[in-house]
Length: 334
Image (cartoon, rainbow, N blue to C red; front, side, top):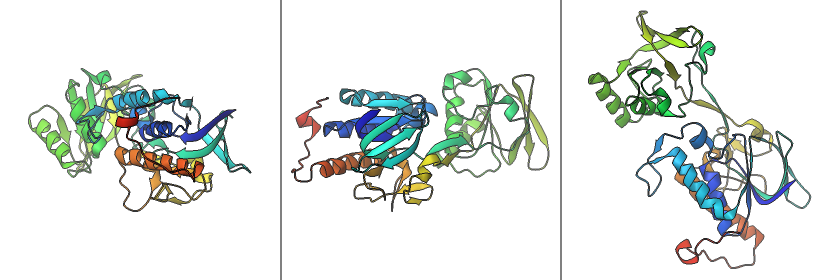
């Protein structure tokens, strides 16, 4: 059995920062995460993707952000139970919690922070003939390492931010890159669209609009992508990789059964302290929902800090709370 002050469900960036803020208050954290490594989506889905809205960093790779957060919390020695999903939580008679994971690990905690991002994710798979035949054999739904595509012929499908972002990045690595989108209109940042159009105009990439990928072909591994245009014509493109980027479908998973107030597939919280409808349980990051919520990493950092101070106040209601800046107090681990 594992005992801790705060059990953090989800080891993404917002959850990891909670361990730092908790550590400053002499509170211990333990993490449970279904992924095999800390970092959440930043580590598993796009470690090499640059992030531009972290204060103090004009640009930082998602994986590097996680590396820095891990270094930041190291003095506070948080625990990790990875590769396991939190299946159930039970409020005990003394107000503490017992959490059981998918591998029957039992974790006792005084408080719970749910920092599960948008829950469990599965890629939205388009309806394309023979798609499943080439999964992990040329079909990738996630770009983990852009270097894998260096010198390769790549076809990307999609019209959102992810499709445009990876098109711009992989255009510098692939020997040949084709972007296929069902429309001339995009759901991506206008700046990204302009950069993509400039690459297409210069011949750096091929952009095929008003079209869909309809079939895949190969012999054991992907060799060809069949593109059907709006008028019914077909274009066949040689391809080493096909990357359909139509987003990820979030699923709350077991969280939906924990008796929490839910809204928009997220957890409703009190924006004063990010507490949920269950006493002692808090939600931070993208999974927390309240009026005027901004789903940004920096917002989750703020929520983590406020929730930690709320917990500290509950534990020490009669103690005067004075926030000491780390520039004065320094960092003292356990």
